[in-house]
Image 1 (tube, rainbow, N blue to C red):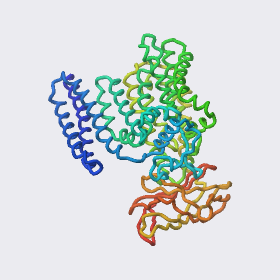
Image 2: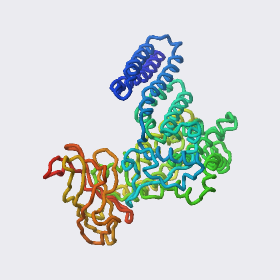
Image 3: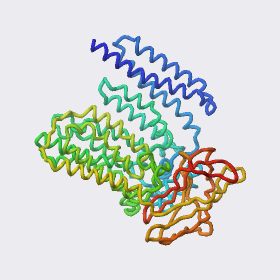
Image 4: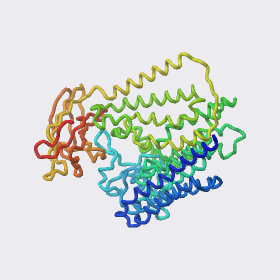
Length: 557
């Protein structure tokens, strides 16, 4: 009876996979206006999904493995036939990261150092580039390569082969397909359904097909997570011992996000070595040297080419005052629930929580060995930059790690002072988080907003700022409309180089909107955001509701 129930459970899970195929087919039904071929593709995909659901329940048990392979093949084919037409029709990137990688690859192919280049809208495949810039608290935006060299070196072969039109998007989609196959083959039989189901999940595939450059490191993170504890097992196959650190080094050579996982892999190797009565420091050092090897191979040529440019580019996300953005805790201020944010305090809180997680990892290693990669996104939820990709990109690798590593029963000596210390550190982190949203350094009052005659675009607004601090402030102004990305800073009329608000002073300014600053839809939420680099803060008006009309265009909720 238990065997029959287990079989039914597996069939139910694979039914979800085929149902996801049906959903993609149904969702593609209305896309025929973009590509007439969808008039055939959409019903065909839907039909294949319906047949798959039926076969899961009526086919003999001996066909199970063949049906599973078929489901993966259908999932990959479904993604290709439903995403490729729209990708072929696109002329512009949907993220500045993808456009930057494309431009960097072109520069490399033409013998120029990508890290020394300043990127302008005119040489990037971005439509209305101001809508895609990553803005800074100081009123500027990121205009240079800000990733390690692997982000564009791995794309260089496509450039050589002539794939020059939105090549970054094609590489990222291919990387995600490869990651899904790795997840499928690395998973035990009972969980193989996870791979095609995640592949058909739009939170991954839509992003990775439309400018989500994180896709490139995902397959390498999966390989790094697969049986990573074999590194210290003498009897393990040779390839599983070195492939994990090498893959992790490649992942770290693509983006900074995998860097946060490095301490946990290294500490985990030391813990495994200790349990096997080996030399923990030696094994951890050997693992770290294997990680460093591909990172050095990718990046050393660019470091030697121009050390200062390479250091400035790769450290930019950790060094520059990027504007708060994302789906994490920072949502409270970007969506107007809180009206003040001190970004540096959130960063300190996140760093403290990262240390707490690492501390807990060592203390409760037996429980967290298979779970720490699931917990790591909690840390990335806290900083002032917590984009959705940071919160989900580790999930495929976390699944592989949880399903492939050995269970251990590791107990540490009882130290009563450790839990109390951790509680104290947790309270400090919570205090930093709370204080991040309190103590407004300036007051902000929106006096008036003017729009074009037909009311589709902002033209000017009048803003009163009150500096409550003892220091002069150099304010910069943005407007956030609904869920759309900000299209740039407003210009102070009569002050093209910006203004300085003296300590303990109040001033009213007239500001001019960026050219592409559209007004909200009727009853849509929006807010005005004032930023400053030194001191570092963001202050908003709180949520406003747009009401079309020439006399009272704005109101409170």
